[in-house]
Length: 168
Image (cartoon, rainbow, N blue to C red; front, side):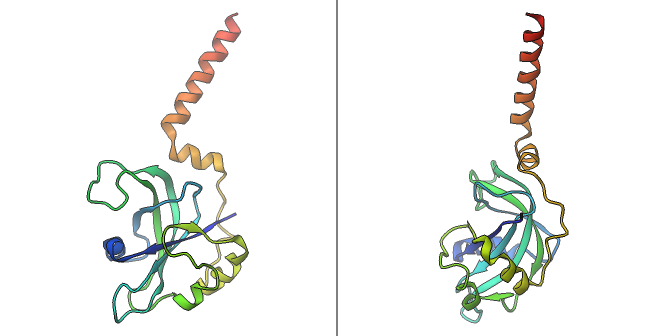
């Protein structure tokens, strides 16, 4: 099942939004620990410009992660939990979902968090999207994608242990 997350962006995070130009673009965004492939991330901009209304201006799907982004000292996600998100839709002029509409499913605008699953159908209707046709990845598939070195080491250790047990 796809989980929908909301990522509130404040003024210091605005360069993250400003670098998104078109749908299809992949961006690195702050992550929640329990995110999985194909989860949806809504980007909420709050009072980012006096002439702009607060609300959801973009959304996308998690295509990789979560992982710790390293070696990018100028990036907001440097040394933090990160996911790669393919932007499915972006609007620069008007919100896709207004702040007033957002109040129906969240009241927290400090950090990324999951929206209660009970609101999924309402949000999908507001966004005019259907994620039911996407193949769902298992949690193990997400771990394999996100942590290949750890899985490889565990697998290699398991094979070595099996060989030792067989020899005894």
